[in-house]
Each structure stands twice: as structure tokens, then as C-alpha cells.
Image (cartoon, rainbow over all chains, first blue to last red; front, side):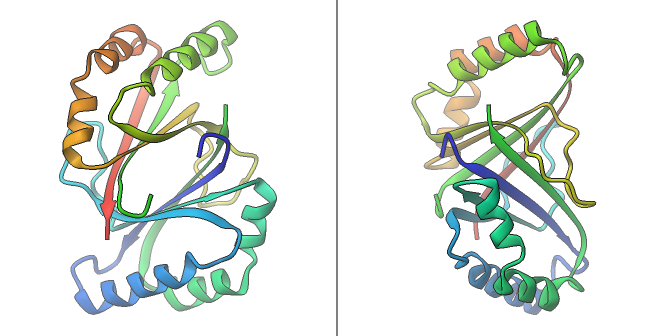
Amino acid sequence: MHQLFVHHVYFWLYEPENKEIRDKFEKALMVLVKVETIIDYHLGIPAATNRDVIDTSYTYSLLVTFKSLEDQEIYQSHPTHLKFIDDCNDLWDKVVVYDSVSI
Amino acid sequence: MHQLFVHHVYFWLYEPENKEIRDKFEKALMVLVKVETIIDYHLGIPAATNRDVIDTSYTYSLLVTFKSLEDQEIYQSHPTHLKFIDDCNDLWDKVVVYDSVSI
């Protein structure tokens, strides 16, 4: 993935312990990552690691890679992405995104 | 990378505009990612995207994937990683790490 566009999103849900909400959110993530311009993805939760510099406070991590910024823009406005936001944006309290291009 | 351990580190350098320091840091990153237990990596800088939820304030992004938590632990204590920290930890003001395992 050395040359790819990396889009990493961390979600803090309002109810991180609510199994029904977690199930709904995980299913929505699995649909989301089917957007055609996504090269590869990782759907994650915090690992068991714990040092001072590690932020373990988020609920879900969504990492997706694209060939280019343009492919990422197609994803942003894709109906599948818009439906994900529409269906799930009342579930999260905070979202932080880091977009990175290769050095 | 669906099933991998994802280790994503964001660095805020004290002198993000200093070309000499950037060169030194980038070279050190390129050596760091040769640690044998790393499956794949991405060395990044903030993309040109800019929305409210996007954090574009970091200087460098280091994304590495591992087969397992154990392989990540080997990396943490690997001489190459310890040398990277020793050589470069006076360059960064802040580091934030997010470790994620698959849902």
C-alpha cells in the first residue's frame, strides 16, 4: 500500500457497550467497504495494547485505501457512503479522520 | 489486510517546516519499516483534503500492519525500532498511536 491514499476514520459511539448498536454499526461498515474505488480496508476495534501514547478510547476504526485522491472523492459522494452517514451518524459522538498521501 | 493488526502512529514534529529535519526523519522511517515482522506499511503526510472532521495538523503518519499482536511486540522491542526512537525522539513534540485488531 506504499503509494496509496490512506483514509483512516476513528469513531466514538455514544453507546460503545450497546450490543444492538454495535451490531448495526458493524453491518453498516461491512456494506460501506464495498464501494468500488476502495482498494483494501480494515475494520477494527482497539487492540489490547496500552501505553501512554496509545489512544484506546475510540470504539471503531475504519481504514480504507484508494489509488488516488480522486478515487477517495468518488467514495465520499458515493450513494453507499451517503447512506452509511444517513443511517449511522446519530450513533457517533465524535469522528476523527486522518487522510495521508505517500511521502 | 482485513485480518491484520494495524498500528498507526501520527507524529507532530517540533519543526515541521525544517527540510533537514524532515529528510532525517523520512530516512529514519524508511529504515524502520524494514523490521521483518512488518507485513506492509505506508509512510504519509497529510493529504490535501480538508473538512471539519479531518485532522491535518500532524507532520508524518506511519502505518504498519502485522500478522498478530505478538509480531507487533517483536517490532516494539526490535533494535531497529529502539534505534529509531533513540535517534528521533527529540524531533517530535507529540505522538499519538492507534492500534486496531479486526472486528
